[in-house]
Amino acid sequence: MMRIVIDINVLLISLPIKSPYRYIFDCIKSGKISLLVSNEILSEYEEKIGEKTLPEIAQNVVRLLLNLPDTEKTEIYYRWNLIVKDPDDDKYADCAVAGNAAYLVSDDRDFRVLKHVEFPKIELLTSDEFLFLLKKTLD
Image (tube, rainbow, N blue to C red):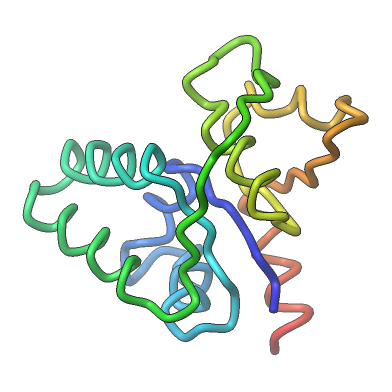
């Protein structure tokens, strides 16, 4: 099963039912892909979803993700400090490395530095690239 880490920006665009990116969230919910999360990532998910909607909706989304059998809670034991422009985003890269993710999915420009990092190697995809990959491999 494909193991992924998704940045909050990708989660936010995949939540609305009528979003062209909804397929990503549906694949997570149906267990077609395994979502890797850490405590820091879950906290950001809840905070940012709560800012865009309501705190209750944010709590429900995080609770749903945690209760899915293919969501993997990942412990971060080492900080790689790879995303220099926005160190707050390092939590996603650290989770991808610790959880041996196939892909880290983000549309944040600050993540592009990962394409030039030789070690640890993290495969970075945009939401469009990931959506294309999912439809190609799962349909």
